[in-house]
Image 1: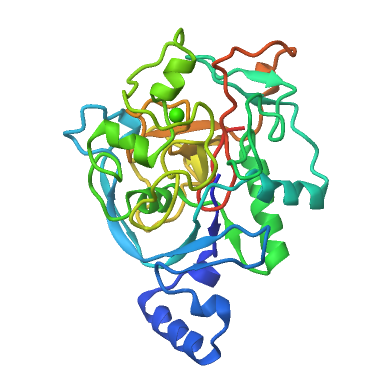
Image 2: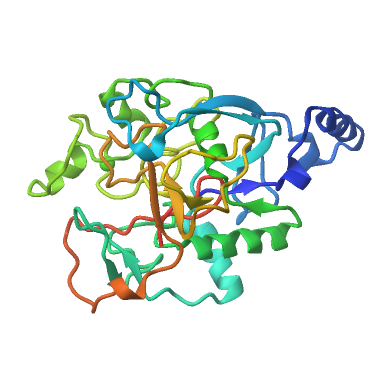
Length: 335
Ligand SMILES: [Ca+2]
């Protein structure tokens, strides 16, 4: 997951408010205020606080254009979104070390299981969790196996810890941050093999490790990672954000809707008139074909692990993979 700092009340400005806040920052010279210039980075505390990047206000076309051969119904209609406020986004997906500080401080119990990729399904495997993912990770890797509700709890804890407002991104904010001013199929352009410089997805590194897997739309380049990659292993987008595509799915605030009919157009999340037991996640993961590492694809998951889909512990398929990630501006993961 990835996190956004600042709710609209504390870190979102209209054009008028921006001028006064910048003036105030210049007068007070408080480190956090002084860092609110778009493109600047800051942390609200050392060590455990995610590094944040200030993103400028702006306008963009959300969704897939009519000419996109991979366009899905849920990605339509393409519509303009105007975000009239600056906000801050986690520079990286939330890491295991950052999430571990939250768990240690709150005593949060482990979930009963984690969703694992057994193409084409994502069954819940009992006994797997954020610190036992079934594949090697270090504290610098994105935290996975985090439910939407746990991502919310993390954001609340971080807000309490710092005295600032942290939350998940809305889906519109996420796509705006992901595109970073580009209109190409992905933020690195339209060459699928360029993906290996910018994103961790289904590449030759993975398919050579698991040659019997049914991998669709694989790319021939090597990104160097079979499973998740440590935060910051790839090139960032134009806003200076890493791993917006691939690596780990990122939770957003929005409830699931069939398409973008009636979607908010000013940057807020859709939280009514939709299925709020199911939440949207974006960006794909290391198990996603690069066809999905486009700016428009949406995915979704129940906001909590589904007991109905739970099963007894068993040996996981070797190509299986828990897939979520935590909050910070990219947040990700599915239950
Ligand atoms: Ca890979």
